[in-house]
Length: 109
Image 1: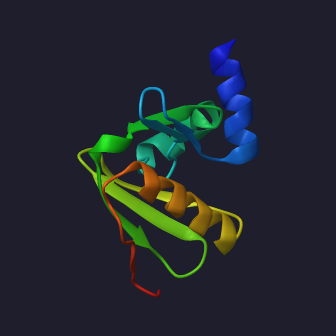
Image 2: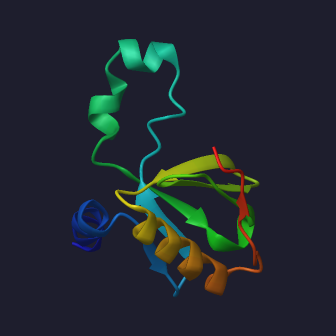
């Protein structure tokens, strides 16, 4: 029941911060799939999945011009996409409150 509620919330809100276990729950990353995964149509089975990232492992935040930003850490790099800049900036602010990373670099591209 908890997983079903999280999936519905992921689709509606996009990002969930779980302060109980200090994780960030977000939609599955389809951008890191290889060509073979795309040819096997693996993205169809991953569309409803979610990823969980430990907030303590985030070492850097990079803000891009537009609606994207990236988080970096032990897990690699992850792009997070939003529908508008306000939602992106709200998520960055919520993330900065929960982690030691204070400033997001803006590369302006």
